[in-house]
Image (cartoon, rainbow, N blue to C red; front, top):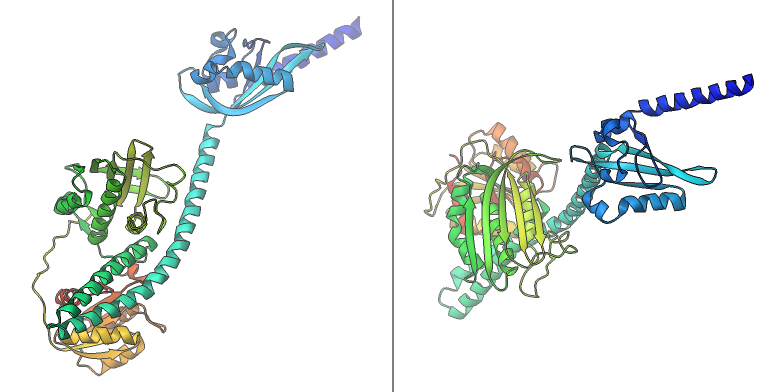
Length: 506
């Protein structure tokens, strides 16, 4: 009798200890269900995670923790059935707290048997919302990294091709200017030259888009009044959409200025408008809007202006949307598009320190959102004179490509300059010592230990007042200029060269 009493006492103490253990666990909801799913016990973890006190929840059916959709689909009963038939049920999914808020739960349900008969279920629920959010954030960052690496690889390829192509275009466009002067009385030759000029400009525009995608374009960022800039190109954008499409503007009056390259911004907006037009073969509406946003995301954080270009067109299929920014990718018919418009937008936005996002629904339209960083300085005003500039004096031309140098010398001489040409930066420094140079015109990409930008900084040290103009069709170091020196993009024509020289500080 004493032995039995001792065993009963030990069993009672064991059960009491177990109840205290379960009741004291705060990080897990540990509770029992009867065979029909009615809650028969409740611990402090259940109260902390789900918000119910024992008096409120014991005797209630556990299905109240599920979402309405899951209840309607019979998920609670199915969970108990799987636990009974297979010996365990495990899942992750949304659950509902007492206050109606949702949390992401890790759930385990085990059947409890006594003498071979099912007497209920033990249920363990853990709130893993923070872990899930961290995992989703990590996956998003990994996807972003993979996408960045893919675009960097494409950028290296397209940037290298565009570099060589720009030098070829420079030779073609410069030589055409010489031919044009000698063929004034030959109408047939003038027409041929005009056709070549048009093709050259088209090639230069395509190359420019490639370089912008590759983020290797030499840009001239400045703070601009976005509302004013959009208003200034409204006529161009209207022409881009055609007669069957209505263009609507909704730019907030208090929209911040942005810091970006004006030319690239205008090209990006035109590309987006044309893309929207092509997505609406039967007509529709394109809405351009702009608003201020403050972001706290990875990798963007701070004050930005969001420019939306929305259409009411066909939408973009889900299997295509991840490819639309790749160069030469297009869903348009042959001859209807180059596949470079959206790649230019992508490169422009990222090079400006922002990004571009897309949201699309089949049959309902697409919204492209370009995010550009807020400009903190006063917006720049265009004060350049439009009159042709003709100068005199001696130019030191620093250009390693002899064919490009020949063309540049011809253009500079037509503008009234005497030209002394060297092939690298070291030779340029030696030439400067002989004096008699009125300004320096140097390519950025050159062989040797010193590129054109380094040369410019060195010249500024030894000849502080010497005007310096840089030229490039492609350069990674051009991004480091930051307005220190003016940059002329290759291929350039004589009027562009003349305007660039006219703006040099003297």
